[in-house]
Length: 123
Image (tube, rainbow, N blue to C red):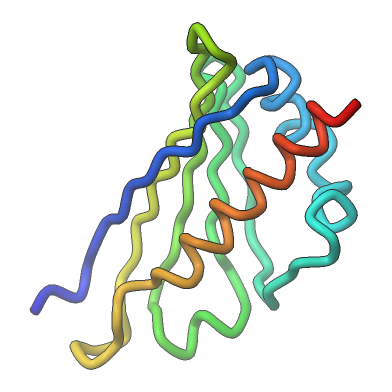
């Protein structure tokens, strides 16, 4: 079994791509309030790519390092006819072969993205 892995998932976004990306880019400090206090004890480094409308979160500290040597999640926002699409790519390395894929952390990211979308489109 490989120690290095990749996960990918998409979230359909109803909000305009620009507004959604702006929250990730400039108002990320509001996300705990937007997603009703959902948190994990993860400290990360954030890299923003304005040209490609993507944000990369590289974990540098936190509980996930009990199981993973590295964890990086990239969220790329693209415009669609209905709104936008958030493509999430997670690259990780497990501490050992007994560690499962980081599904709960991927689900955490997907749920936050859904919460941000709901926040933007609420009346």
